[in-house]
Length: 319
Image (cartoon, rainbow, N blue to C red; front, side):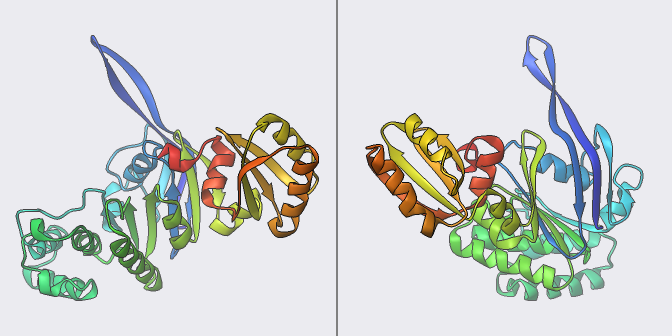
């Protein structure tokens, strides 16, 4: 295992005005096991505890309790060894806006202990790998968001770490730059680098990761591969908008071909293993009760359906 964590917790002291303080438990007992060579995602809304978890694993903040090992080293007792074996790319990135991207890359290499010659060779390798050579000497403030992200990723890989943490790596990027960065992450895996990324983007977790956890209010509420998690919900989801919502919910919940029915605001979601065959039966059942539909749609189950099942709300709304 490249990462092992047991009952990891983090409590902060928050000021509440008039000199009062309050304990806030940001991470509430996380158990985690990440295999070497896989892309692992922590999916959840903003404020769920994803970044705090990663910062503990990267030794930037100490856990209040619990234990964790990264690359075989204890994050508290052997923090320096952990740092030697990881790369970390924060939401803010590591590029100085007022300097050329190359300077930030060289600085990271020198700080890691490389000689000037070694730093220059490694920087040139990374510039070529991330298609940054032509813009290496431009001030970072003149670069696009995607270009800055590529520089930040390059900085995180200066030491050729076996594990890279990516905290919300595509926040603020346009679709094309997001797709480009996804390709870079897949390349890392192909080269044997382990990746743990945090994200609140459903499509990102679904498209990139081998396995994922869903975090909400500091706790893991689901874990598995994207495919297995979606299978737990059902194969297909029928979303209905109609009058007589409660009557329809009770009716559909009694149908043996429907696994689960959930009400969400003015909608009903019915989860079926086989929507193609179940939908005609569902429509007949509603018609027999004279329940008139305003709208209906049939979709494959998504990770948002998984989040909804475990938390009672949509990740799109929570994020």
